Length: 126
Image (tube, rainbow, N blue to C red):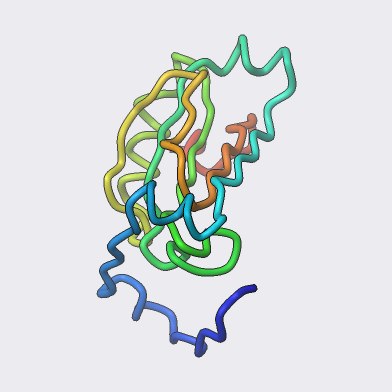
């Protein structure tokens, strides 16, 4: 069951802080990490770098009920610097880091979505 959450105006999320429950508490409450990787099998080879961040606004509710919300962008080695710069400039993400293509978030509650950086992605436009 998703809790009722009031609408927050744009920008308010940047000032919120979310403390995720421990993995033991999340497991006891029956929540599990939801993981979605948009890459094809071929893209898992060609896009081996993931630039990952913790979404401060979406953590704790919706698909991430009871835990953190992670967003990652899978990219080629050549695009890694530009993608990292683009992700770090986003105001909704904290704890930006580079992880390997086989990354799996810690167990427990939450949501993790891996997107694919394609040729028209904003990070590649410079």
